[in-house]
Length: 186
Image (spheres, rainbow, N blue to C red):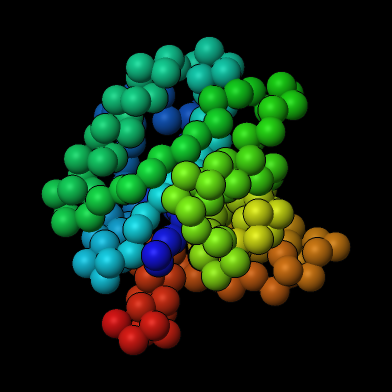
């Protein structure tokens, strides 16, 4: 099974320091939905792993988060794509849970559910914690410059982890998918 793991905010949709709190605030990054559809047409499974601390902070409810995700799924479907799995951490950063990135708990859960070895699986993110979670889970970290990606470029140069410093960097999800597809004969 071929799988690509994506972060949500900053990779698929525009991010906000104030959190995405309503379906109307969920705004896709140009080309991201088409990139997901292209992966699906090439028979890749697409999974999303995302921290959603706004739930744990009381900024929005689980019901609202589900409505936001339903909007995302619908817009992806309109472009011809599909999301096979969405795993999220609803906890605030200070709870010490095992599912919040940079911990790899949700990656391990996805691997267990999907029965897939993550060793060759690209995990596309825009933050250091996305990259650290991918490395900790044994996936292949990929950085995009959208969202927090530009700030993250500076941070990864100071990382003690060689795997973080050597991460592949792309302008956005569409650029990653273009390169990934060419490299794999699509």
